Amino acid sequence: MNPSAWISKIKSWISLFEQDTQIDNLEKKWLYIATGMVGLFVAAMTVTAVVLNVNPPSHVETIDSASLHLGQDFAEDKLGVQPAPLPDGTIQVKLVAGRYGFYPREIRLPAGRKIQFRMASMDVLHGAHIPMTNMSTMIVPGYVSEITTVFPKPGEYPLLCNEYCGMGHDHMWSKVTIVAQDEWRAPTPLGNQP
Amino acid sequence: MSDENHTPGEEERSPTGTWVLMILAAAGMTVAWLFLYFGIFLPRGTVS
Image 1 (cartoon, rainbow over the protein chains, first blue to last red):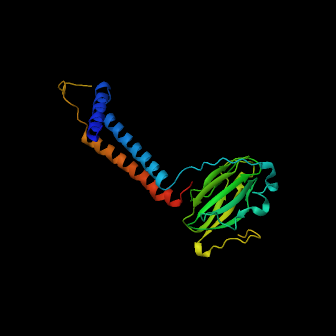
Image 2 (tube, rainbow over the protein chains, first blue to last red):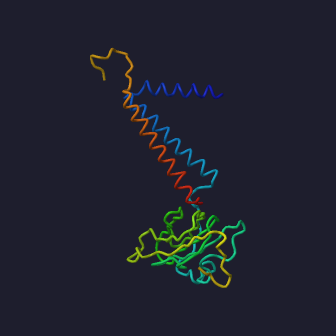
Image 3 (cartoon, rainbow over the protein chains, first blue to last red):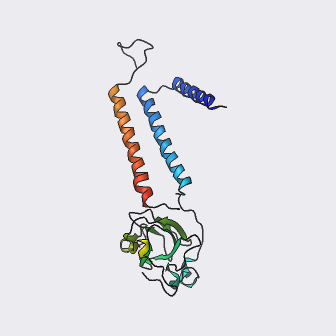
């Protein structure tokens, strides 16, 4: 069907709807306006999801939370900012969440570069949230949470736990320092430096 | 609903003031949503 046929079909549906339903005139107009607004918002989110790749992280990877310190990925000397970036230039950060902190306690990252957080819990359910940014995810025991984001603005940000995890939950936070790209240096392979 | 001032079949016209208020409310909400999404949320960094 050509576009004008579609338009007249849609108009006939609208007139059928208007004939068969007893809705107040003003309410009908508001219905169309509200539906149009919702359509606009859904279209905006769909376009940005496709064009800018903005979408909730979808990553399923299991891990034994009781023996993180014995594993290859989350052993204590492997935590923090990784010395070598991923092949596409993304900087990888490995964190362990446990009552009551994120380890390592301080990390230093560059602004304007893609950062991938790989996080695991060593005990209970935690959340990881950096206020004033879009970095926020849950860390579920038994799974690795992986989230990639970009920090546009340099500054010092807290990394907070936003999922109740016990008596010390309100003290569970670490520090993330975002610096300009030319001020940042990747840590040496021997140790992770703040 | 009809009363003695309406003849049968006459289309009811919405009061202009109500129209204006509706449009203002819709425009305000749309602008606020678009500002928060494109002006605050997305500039804080994309997430995937």
